[in-house]
Length: 253
Ligand SMILES: Nc1ncnc2c1ncn2[C@@H]1O[C@H](COP(=O)(O)OP(=O)(O)OP(=O)(O)O)[C@@H](O)[C@H]1O
Ligand SMILES: [Mg+2]
Image (cartoon, rainbow, N blue to C red; front, side, top):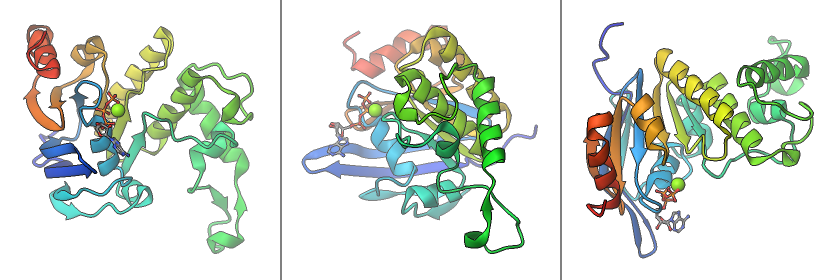
């Protein structure tokens, strides 16, 4: 593969405030195709806020987001998705009353025949169910009933469904906010494999995790946030692990 010449995603001087809380303070970062970028930091450091600004859920107060070198406004999650940004949120944005297949395709249903205008087409329920089942199967997550609403599923099962959904639709950038936090060992392993595959397919993957083993095993680079500021950008490996931990906790380690 030729070396990519520009980042797929650039954040420039991002600021986000919630009332008196300055959740992001002049944060800049680049994400490159075929790279897993770990986004690290203690609770409340601003990681999820940054993810939500990239995925169109929050607007930045100041600063810019560039995709492939061009400034963009991601005014809604739909706009971000249309720009090729898939997100697995920490607080698991699945629709409780829908089945996994319906959750996969909510807002982007498959339909036929293609020559009819969208509102007149039939939903291709069989195709949607089949794709969802195949991908969930690949994750080797055992679901009690594949067609049951996700409200009946455990936190880990729901998390696996959310990750599976992102892998189907990823085209560019995948944001994963603590995707293994609720998972058992076996399921977490599967998710790590999926992340490696997303990278191999050329996506820029931004992974938020508190698991330093996962960081040293999988991440090509790590950016550390502390109290809304970027305090580090380094290559994580066994030798830099202690440095990373110190950056995260602010020299208290
Ligand atoms: N919608 C909101 N309204 C008000 N304050 C918010 C909101 N979202 C986040 N914050 C505040 O912004 C700061 C950063 O929160 P954020 O969720 O980004 O942290 P985080 O790094 O993801 O932490 P964690 O590891 O616990 O998930 C916190 O002080 C939090 O209380
Ligand atoms: Mg968070």
